[in-house]
Length: 311
Image 1 (cartoon, rainbow, N blue to C red):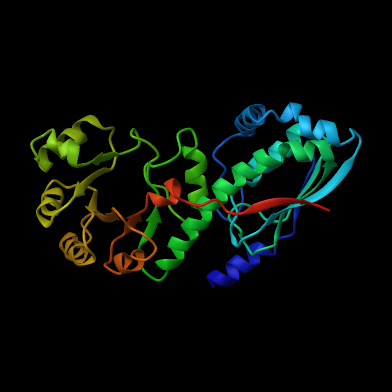
Image 2 (tube, one colour; image 1 turned 90 degrees about the horizontal axis):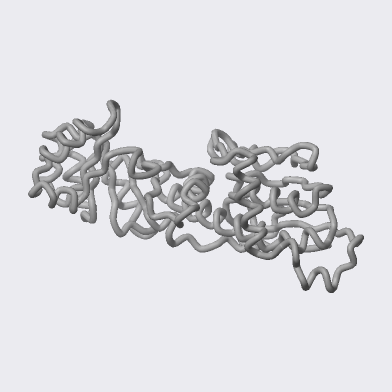
């Protein structure tokens, strides 16, 4: 059924964008792009300014002003698409009359050589916008593609793949969006979103989990989830006794995690964290944990190889 759903999504008719209708922001399923169109435009304009795209000396010297061109933004490796609205906006800013056919939306799985965008517009504009468009999409599609690999590894278990706060400064909303494009789930957005009591927080209260949780309950707004990072069975028991909502099993072996999951027995959400990779994630998921958080999704994802090819 999942494969049928993905196949159906990939067979959606292409969407055409002109400057008369601003780029649709969204994608597959419940995806929502994290910025309004005005915020998107400011971000992309800033990137174009940084790259000197409005004074592309090479293009100005070699391409006549009225030359038009057609091209495809294609995947040179298989992966998951993310960042289409950003790429579209880059081309639209530099050529208000560009026409763009969106062949693959964010969240779509693409094969090597598959077209993502088909563009018709002024050659100078397409060339000047190319690098910014690719920089956004390669980075975000890399995050989405790596996330999809982790999601596939744990398929059939109860575990969900989560990101962390280990994001590129200024790019958090985009990178967490890319995680969703890859089928992952977002952990807390920032330090004000939830309570996560870690080892250094516990050290500040002499290791007393109950005191840390009680203080968090007293300070945080009603309904705020409280999570405790645990490195031993004793800490897990203490977190449960303190009625923590989430118990993080930090840098434990799969055997230890299994013991902790049995101890928790549904009284709290269990989260595995620390040093998890594609070789170990399946074994960890099979312990019965609810969440598996992976910092590598955002801090170590390789860029997806994409290119703009002129016809």
